[in-house]
Image (cartoon, rainbow, N blue to C red; front, side):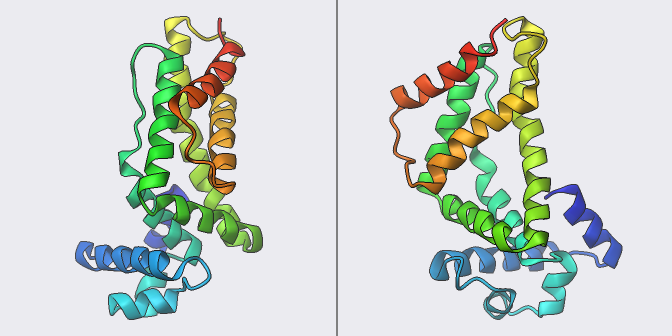
Length: 197
C-alpha cells in the first residue's frame, strides 16, 4: 500500500476491520479474475464482498487504489535476493517476477492497472506512487552492489531499477513472459555491463 493511499484512508478517519478488508480484497481479486478489467467495478466488488460501496471508498479512494492493493497482495512472493553479486541478484529478481506474473493472476491485474492509468488521472497517480516504491526497493539491490564496489559510484540505482522494470513491463504487456532463463540472464548481463565499476 503506498503512502498516499494510506494518508487518504487516515483522513477519512475510518478504522479498517481486518476481516472486512480481507473479504473485500478477496472479492476484488475474484471479480478481476472472472470478469477481467472491463468487468471490474466497485459495485461488482461490493456485491461479491457483501459490503457497502461507501465502506470500500472509505478504505480505497479509487478503483485504482483497490487494484493496487490486490496486486500487492498477489506480489508478496517476488524475490529481492542478496547473493553478493548484482548480476545474480537482478537475474533472480526478474526471473521470480516473470514466474509470478505467469503463475498467478497478478500479471493480469497489473496489466489492468496500466490500462486504467491511461484513462484515469487518479489511477495514473496511484500507479506513479506504486512505481516510486518499487523503484526504491529494486534500487536497494544496486545500492548494495555499489557498497561492495561492483557498481560505479556515478550510477543512479533508481535509473537501473527503471531499466529492469521497463524490460519486465514490456514483456508483460506484449505477452512474452515465457522467456527462458538464458534469455533473461543475457538481458540482465547487458544492463549490468553498463553499470559496472
